[in-house]
Image (cartoon, rainbow, N blue to C red; front, side):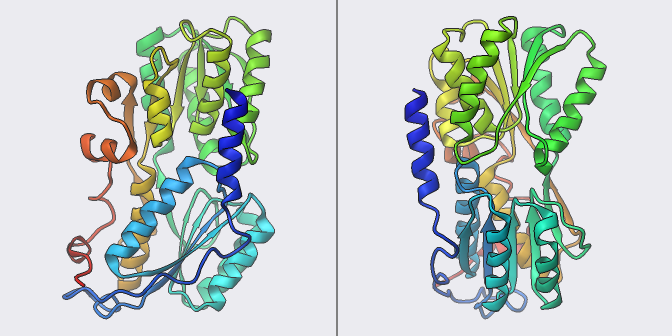
Length: 353
């Protein structure tokens, strides 16, 4: 099973092109009644994704593309391989292409802040998620990370009481994970009977594969672990592989953050130890980021920080509602699609061709 996971993730990573994936998507007609420049169309946006091997950013990109199509925006996507130098070059390419907006999803802020400033100086709207940038002009798309962890930890207490023995999967240096780590530390302080027995984790081209091997070794060394907190779904996938292969699915429960179609399928497997996750829709977040660019260009964006609300998703809910994929989750879980976030009346109308 670990071998199959490696092959699947490696194949996904291999899809990523060196720097730019394609020319701009075809321009669509403007939106009647929309404010300039969307009344005439021709707005160009670049999407730059730092991580490309996981489902989250694939779904995020799909949300950006879908919203771009609906608003008649010409979109060019760049996919990275966790290389700051490549991300710098991609931002420079976007500037040279004369885009109106750049969405930066992930990365190391200190490595790209100077080229981000070049984009701002060129009059380009910059929207960022999962990357810390110093410029006040940058529109930040953020998830309520503390609430995400609070939701799933509340479920962990409901399922296991307040005296469980935890294994914690975490890697420092990634803004979303670091914010979730703050919430985990606060939870432990408020629940002194919860004992963290071990911490491990990795962020590389195949995080689930690496974490699966780490988890297997950790469970051999710390057999009393009965709850695994995995604040990224790639971590949870790896943990599930290890727990399943060790035959421990009946006594270890996995709690995570983020969700995708493959996560839903893994959570719904009979006897799955992965019992709950807390998430903000990846595709919905991507669409919201694109809408933030649009509203910034029209002058309608009220705040440069957009905080998106998370939702608790349990194995029971998925089974009771027969949810098979993220599309069905968006339809069946009220508010999960985020369509009411970062929007305006003209955006809901979309393009009429």
